[in-house]
Image 1 (tube, rainbow, N blue to C red):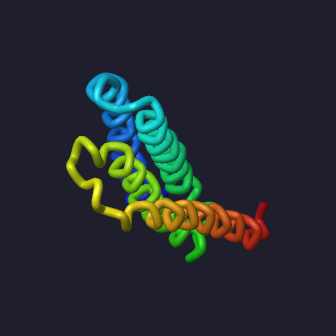
Image 2 (spheres, rainbow, N blue to C red; image 1 turned 90 degrees about the vertical axis):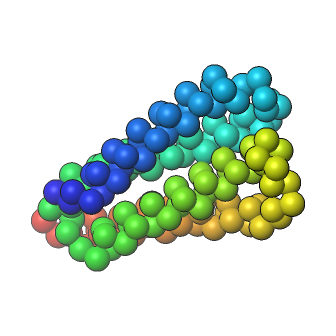
Length: 131
């Protein structure tokens, strides 16, 4: 097992629940429907990849390779860039950061990190000849 990925996934899942509740209760009346949907998309992807990190940590002994390690790091980067930028984009009118135009291009970079993470996990599994 890899404690770092299990701990990171657990912390990010807990944060995802907190942000989901915050969006459903505190932001529901303050955001437009499309903004709230963007925020919820960030929460969903954060939860998916937090669970992926936990699974990665559990499977680490079976698929112990540099591809597995980098996969986890790319999942974490994806959460930071993809989900983080969606949170900021959807709440920028509340936060007063409407002028932050650089947030839009960050979102696809985070999505690319997620894709790279999944491909690296696939390569790690394919390299393992014991299964």
